[in-house]
Image 1 (cartoon, one colour):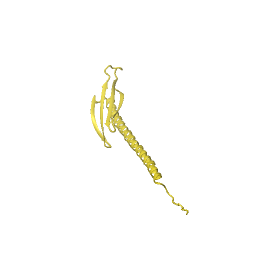
Image 2 (cartoon, rainbow, N blue to C red):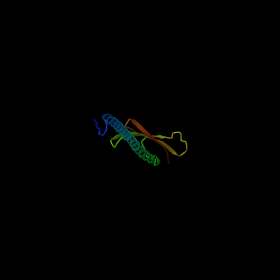
Image 3 (cartoon, rainbow, N blue to C red):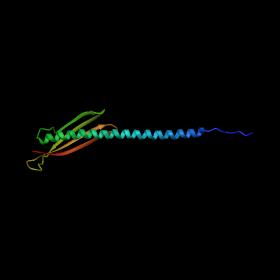
Image 4 (cartoon, rainbow, N blue to C red):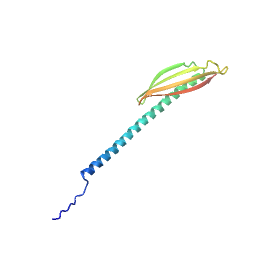
Length: 131
């Protein structure tokens, strides 16, 4: 007697191997997305801190150029942007050695720090000449 085996399809072993391969692929994709989201958040934090630091630096530079009584040190000013707390501090140093006669020089240092995916800080400096 001749028995015909016309069954078509996948065996259980083939299905298990396919499931493992698909699972590894999905987990790899999810890990890549996690890294992408973290990188975007860090980049966004640096951009926001840079904007906050440069804005304060410009403000203090204008005050020094106009010979206004700028605060020699200040902060921390706390600013919340997109759910992240930024602390902004600054110092203003005068040129006591009088490198140039009749010219006032100020060194302005602005630091912005925050703690999102670890403590981070950016610092900006500028020398300002006043009248």
